[in-house]
Image (cartoon, rainbow, N blue to C red; front, side):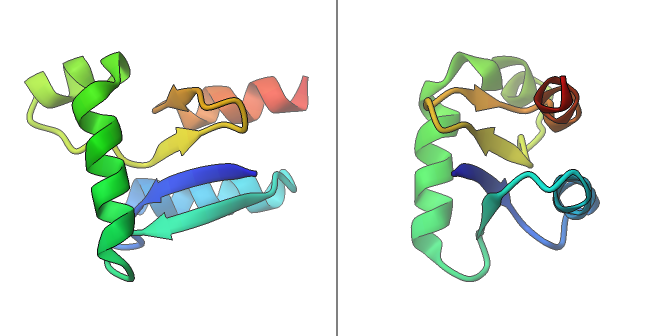
Length: 86
């Protein structure tokens, strides 16, 4: 199942979840505020995945972060949704 790392305090995360629900794409949302293990998992991804390089250089967080079933890490959830519909 698709994993989404983020926080419901982030408007982009809220929008991502709303769009995924409308598109009927199943996912699990891993909220940072509910469980610090979720934050630790996200930080491990952020520290090791190349997709975060530009995000970190610009002082951004990088959420929502999508991890697909095959382990691919993505930050462009809109592109993911459009590809899933194809």
